Length: 230
Length: 230
DNA sequence: TCCGTATCGAGAGCGCTGCTCTCGGATTAG
DNA sequence: CTAATCCGAGAGCAGCGCTCTCGATACGGA
Image (cartoon, rainbow over all chains, first blue to last red; front, side):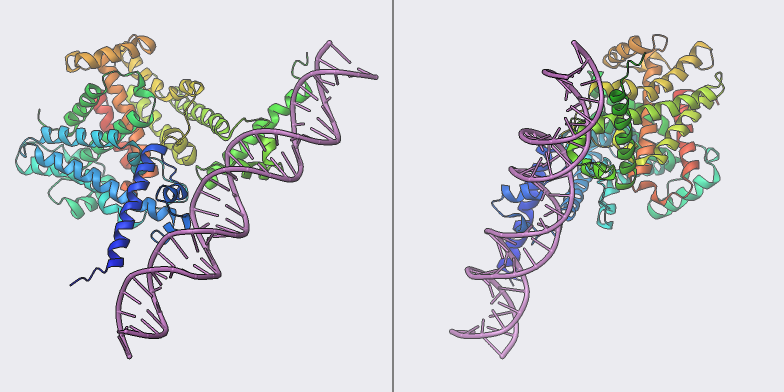
């Protein structure tokens, strides 16, 4: 019954340890991860790491997927912990959870949402985990709509080409959410990303002392735009 | 009258040429600029470049400042070309100009607004040029307010700590713009950055065929939130 | 149980990077 | 005219990602 042989288990353990050390390096040294440094930290020689990851980019990809999942899990947990019939409360919970995760893991956030690494092209494995936060957000809108807790924006505000594009997204993920509301949900997701990125990367908010309050106020403005009742 | 000697002029010309070649490399090869490759392209040896830029980061800083200024100039020119008494028109003009510049210079945009380079700390020379786009945006609000073309949002919506922070910004740059309106202007700037970054970096909009229309729609939503009359 | 095979870590090495130092040649200023 | 300054070339250092080879080990089928 030991389908995973000893060697296979040791190998899986090795992969995990390499990722753990790499994540630590990412947190301290920043985004330019050195495979050699990781190997050195593990008492290995650099070529040995290549037994487990065919290239440095593959190591990065593994870290990216794990980071997406960690963020997605934090966001979904915050959403699940909120009152299901309070769309605005869920919206704030999700926004705060995303920001908290980003502030706690700035290097990983930069990996996910910063400028793409030059030669690096994100493989398809990442698109599923990457969609978890925005899907959570739109899920709040869907629940609020079906529960009659929010009134959708007028559909007429959407130009036809935009509606056509959003219709595909809508059918793929949220058949119940009309396109105009979906557009506002994406606006909220864009704003959330912008707020966090400015706080982490930029110098704009360097002069803001009360960042928590600023963040809450700005996400509150977006909640108003989306139409979440307060 | 030749205060700039021959050597000084040649030196300035050399600096310009190095920056031009580096900018070309940035556009083709991506963000990881190789000082040696730049030197090679100029028929020089790498150590010679160090006569003009003490380090690779200083070269990057020079490029960053120039990029900020190029973006700022594009934005300000678009604003100046619009009808001064049409805040919403100016808002759209600025947004479109910023997006157009970013799409035309993706690598430079990534340099400005992407994840910060690990060991790199932006020097103070960059903060002035970096403020030009957001200042242009808030300038539109100020003009609209003094011309009576837009009604400011209720001040009561601002919590005290946020107002205190924004009051400093307000006094430093726009004494005429009340804090609540300033907050909405910053929301607009954040959204603009988010929209452009998602389009350039992310895979979210990969499925959107009509990106121009989507961008206009989203910036229109933000114009509504800011209170620009349409 | 034994043996061929697959896996693994170590080491050497290639070409690249940013950066430093030294050494001649050219240009400038006094 | 001379002395100080600037400039480009070259060698070299340490680090990087990655490849290849070579013994040592563990595995699975006969």
